Amino acid sequence: MSSRNRLIAVPAFVVLALVGASACASSGGAAKPAAAASTASPARTGTGVTAKPSPPPAKPGTPAASGSRSSWVPDNPSLADVCRSKLPSQARDTLTLIDKGGPYPYRNDGIVFENRESRLPKQATGYYHEYTVVTPGSDDRGARRVVTGSVGEEYWTSDHYATFQEIDGRC
Image 1 (tube, rainbow, N blue to C red):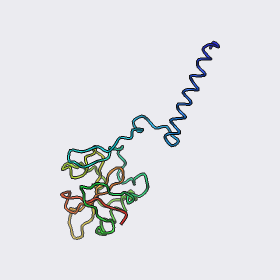
Image 2: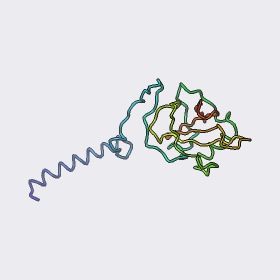
Image 3: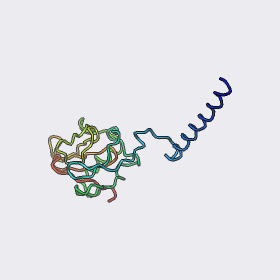
Image 4: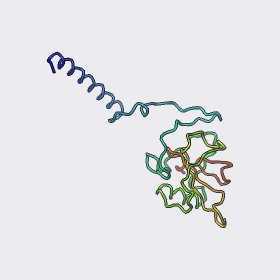
């Protein structure tokens, strides 16, 4: 490499290094890919409900990044909240299994919940997963379910998806 090319290459490398260091410092220590760096505001859905942008889907039963799923704070004003402690004991048992990642009593537990009726905030397919809540005396899976979202939200339905309540783990 000639000395003239070296004089151009070295400052260009230094500039790139400074830009990379600046990006790393502003992102808390690790440069983020362009798609992840977006700080999009919540989107409005057609139902008038504010929904968060869809993060990449998590594996079924994986707790939210902040630890236990029960640390989720309900934020959907169109859904009634229910205290985790007020749920039937079988629902609390199911939530504990979800936090642990299983094993689940039914082979359908953890499958994708498609939200066909749009009773939950609209998200990409694969965002929600459903889990059976044991119904004492029932010969089948019964009507009770917990549905989880990829960022930690939890929903309770006692009537096979006709209505939902957002579970509040703080109480």
